[in-house]
Image (cartoon, rainbow, N blue to C red; front, side, top):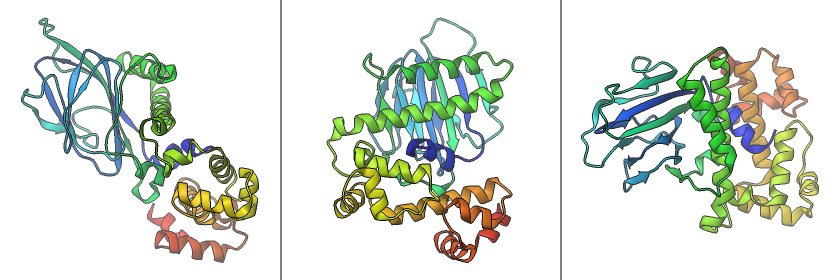
Amino acid sequence: MDVLSDVVAVTRTGRPRSAYVRWHAPWGQEFSSVPGSAGFQVVLQGSCWLLPEDAEPVRLGTGDVVFLPHGKGHILADSPETPVATPACDPDDPEPYDAYASDSVDRSGDGSPVTVLLCGAYQLDPSRAHPLLLSLPDLIHLPAHPGRRAELGLAVKLLAAELETPSLGTDAAVPALLDTLLLYILRIWFDERPLRGGHTTGWAAALNDPPVTAALHAIHRDPAAPWTVAKLAAEAGLSRAPFAKRFARLVGQPPLAYLTWWRMTTAARLLRTSDAPLRSVAAQVGYTSEYAFAHTFKRAHGTPPGTYRRKG
């Protein structure tokens, strides 16, 4: 597993939710702030305005993608002056929409301008939030343009088709496509971030630094391996001291601190999603001693692994 794949696999919990919605002007809809979640909006047809809680309005056009990694509330409307409908849309509320809804807010078709949106939400586990996600801004806007990677548009089209016309297998296809869409959004953001900001530290820089990325991939590929700073430095193609300094500067913590954090995060997922004995979980994250594993896990999560599992 690479870093981005693991971020999605480990931090997402439950089933993601998505909807295909057609709006006829005038319209305005508030989307609730949902801490511990991430949401997206894609304009499939027409245009609209995004009105964030703490930022200036953003004009969105066909093909634009908006990602809100921290579940911040926002408003979408055909115009900044349009009154907003109530109640606010909340992805945790089972009443307004099914998990995968295809809805038309106004089916009258009276000739008013139409905007078609693809929206969705991911429920995240705050206790396993990866620092990569925590480093993201409240709002990521990826405007449509011909030079952007085509796979993002293809994932959007496939997801929209499944939601607009559900068929056999849609329940399996939609979660997979949502995860794929999230991966493409993150991939594009981190690939383009150094070009936009020129940052020399942080996860954007780390994922664009081949030596550090090689070490991160090694940790994620085999967290149970008996990694040392020297062995990770060898994966990075650097000597020990320069590697350790470079890794800490870009990732924000020393190599072995990140390794321990990732092992405990992986262990938490295994405890919640499998019935494997504690000794097996310990072995899968690099501990030959169940006692040493339990001690490290309690220090990281505030509770012993057995209690953590029983609490679900």
